Length: 111
Length: 111
Image (tube, each protein chain N blue to C red):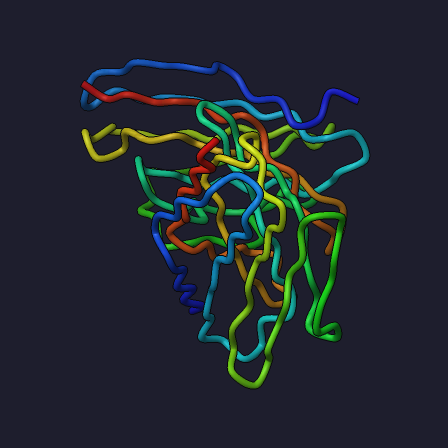
């Protein structure tokens, strides 16, 4: 079992650009959540996808959007990047109300 | 929404001693409390969790206690080893799956 895998591992983008991050959940998991972790802080919930729909959303602007595919994999899109969007983006998967497993994250740097 | 506070922010212990990290939460509806360990460059790894119908749970050198009345829960690591050095996060959630994290505790085990 490969666990939760994210790609790419690192990414550098320019202010104003758009970025897409990808996540493959752990085998057997149907729910994917995305978190933003700024340096030295705890992860902050962005949103959660279940059955290809956004089930919950945290306090993030509409520039942050996502998608879940029929195979349960997911994408996080961020438009009009700001310097403050620089962070580690984490994907977590779970099955129902079970424990969440995290991927290794994508380190996004906006310059 | 849920607010989780975590203390201390840094903790240095001698190898073989115990380490204790404390968290408080604000939402009385929270019923699941996981603890994650995050090593440099990696995603958070679940190390132990507890549900609100249990007061204490132990797994080898790690234990977690929960006081629902006081809305606080703690992580106890006994016989600390150098490989226990990492950042530890507590989290809380109700049945809506969204995890609210504390700010993290950097634990350093001195040889």
